[in-house]
Image 1 (cartoon, helix red, strand yellow):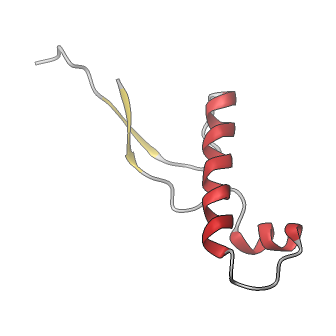
Image 2 (cartoon, rainbow, N blue to C red; image 1 turned 180 degrees about the horizontal axis):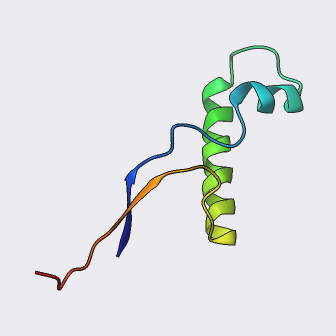
Length: 65
C-alpha cells in the first residue's frame, strides 16, 4: 500500500492568486477559498493520478517481515 508520509508544503495555486482570479480583496472568505483550493487540488490529482506538488510517499507491504 502506498501512503503519503509527508504532506506537501503548499498547493499549486496560492491564496493570493485565487483571490486575484476571483476579484476578492477582503479576508472574510480566506478560510473558504483555502479549503476550496485544497479540495480542487485533491480532486484533480485523483482524476489524473498524478501529484501536482512534491511529497514523500512510503511503500508499506503488509506481509513483509
